[in-house]
Amino acid sequence: MAKSPAAALTGVVKKYGEKTALDGVSLNIPRGSVTALLGPNGAGKSTAVGLMLGLITADAGRVELFGRAPQEVVARRKIGVMLQTAALPETLRVGELVELASCYYARPRKLAEVARMAGIEDLLRRPYGALSGGQQRRVQFAVAICGNPELVFLDEPTTGLDIEAREALWNVVRQLIAQGCAVLLTTHYLEEAEALAHWVAVLVNGRIVTDGSVDAVRAVGERRHIRCVSVLPAAQVRQWPGVDAVTAQGHRLDIEARIAEPIVQRLLMTDPTLSELEVTRAGLAEAFVQITRREAA
Image (cartoon, rainbow, N blue to C red; front, side, top):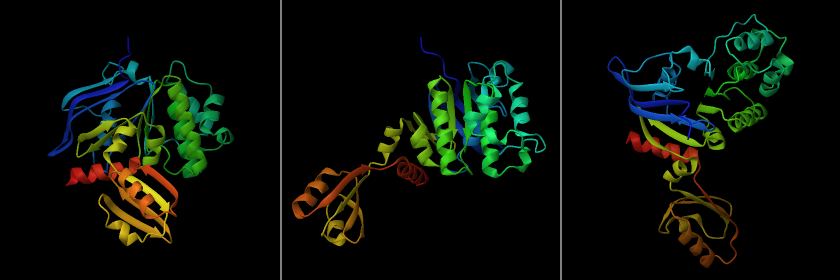
């Protein structure tokens, strides 16, 4: 029998005065996977997270955390949270902070394990307030995972991290998933969602307008990039049926189209010297832009 989701919103409505932040939103956060909640600023992402954390209550609909009300302590002890901003005691040493947070959990991870996972082994004796922004983000991640949670909320987790630290965090998230943990990810780095997420939900103006696997959401963009080295002028290729746009750098062409095959065939027939042909589909970032533009229109 399949386990119930770690968290769920069902037909949730939340208003702030006259403004409707969430309008009938339904979303499941399954165990053992990463769910990415994406959307422009003001779309309602923070409200959705706040509801699942039990920080606010819904005006209508149902919010569940491990099948319980999010305010119940027994449910809250199963989660870890890394919000976009965090106010931690600046005078405490990093090791003290992690151990303090661990005290709230029944079966926390050992400090050495947490430090290794978060990459803070060399920071444990340093005051939190003396750390750089990127170092503080790593400590906040350590606090989020120290309790060995079954569900982790990651809100813009890699803001302020360099490439190496970002990739290290991604690897730890994959380890957590392999152990059966659930992760809800909100991020403006679309490549982050593309690298980690199993399921993507796009929230616009308080409604989920698209959801599905990364591949399914990417397909909404319906664009292909055709790159090649050709003697054909960009202006000529731009006139072909099915071509949406062409850019050129010397003899290198970058062609955008919804269907690639007929354009590739015509390229090969028209230019016998064609080389370095490559066809790729639109990424998640491009699909996201198209979805949000469509909804705005």
